[in-house]
Image 1 (cartoon, rainbow, N blue to C red):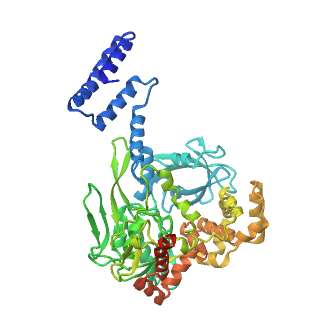
Image 2 (cartoon, rainbow, N blue to C red; image 1 turned 180 degrees about the horizontal axis):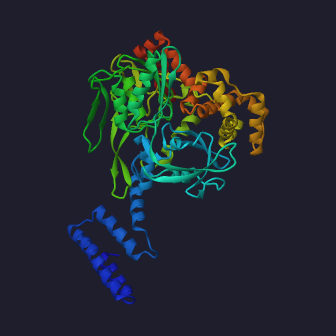
Length: 571
């Protein structure tokens, strides 16, 4: 039906009901109809005018009332879903939650907590933060916030965080249950800025090798990394392992600033280019402090975006040996477009390329987000995480490094110089059930709650704890019993397979709480991390380290040759 026909039909209907509504309708309709007729005179309606007419028709004639804002938001989401997997729209609340971890701080009361028996349990207070200043202690249970019970009411973690967080300078009243104190203790806390760190752990692995674990690329990542390296140098560090496993990326500039520390002046770090975005090159400016430091970079299948930019720059310039598994493969650059209501559209405007020219974006089909998201699972099904022979290495995607001209490969993600298979030998269904039900975490919290004073007295340092602490058989029987109370049937064979993993994970969680240090968990489990073991062996083996940087991994050439022969066999 044309616009004028539609106009006549609804005029007749509305005249029977309301002259006021009719006048309002006529005025609005004339505007849209005029636009439509003007377009008709020129032969074709533009997509934007078509969209406006559709919204007008829905808003005016639809059988039920509609929310205009939601209609527009759904339209934006629908358009973006037809593009690439990383263009997205977030409302004001989602935008704040998305950007907060990368800004390096938020406003709150300054506690790290976990949920134990439906109650908020304080693991640690932030040093110098609002909660520490008023006297809240590790082990305290917060039961009310501003007279609202949060314990025993099955309140979600997000809802609890909303009540504790708020603008800097605002006050919140909490009531705390403290062990061995019968009455509740009331605290009035003034919220303040709380730092969020992206360097999760840093420590010495041996007398010359430092280790830095980076969880995201945020505003303060570069400064945090420099601080961590400086601390390690004071302890004798002469070579460094940078762990980017599970690092999903963040800000492009953070990756550029970090790369700059390790490259000579003028060397390309990354370049970006898009249909409407001209090529932009980022190069090292020569101010880097660690251009001669021997480094290994650890990555895995969850290392993405900014992690791949940094890793690609180090690999392309033969600056570091890369250890682990093929990275995620996100090579698209999003530009944030903020709206007045606090919402944001992140639109892909360019691709980024490593210095050697690799675009490491993995293949995708427009509009098929499900298949894209399932790629990580499909890699596991195809065996890529467990055997080198499952990795597809194609000559057509072969590049050469810029310093030593050794072969490196594209095709989606960055292929490490040394492949380390994923270790699942101790990961039984019994272990997964105990983890999924929260038994492991809950037992660690409860153990520290009962033994905190004794543990602090017995172990002055984390190294002392690592050398001297172990869970007894009685402790483990109690742990098993906790699982049985939560309907997890004990399986002797599977328990024995996972026993050492259980003990090490529990020990790491206990250390984290006792020493109020998130990095303590990584420190305790470093002996079990096979990626880290491989990285340490390589960085301490000068001959192998140099051969990898000069010649590359000969196994990849074998795989490439096998794939070259495959078409001949098919024929």
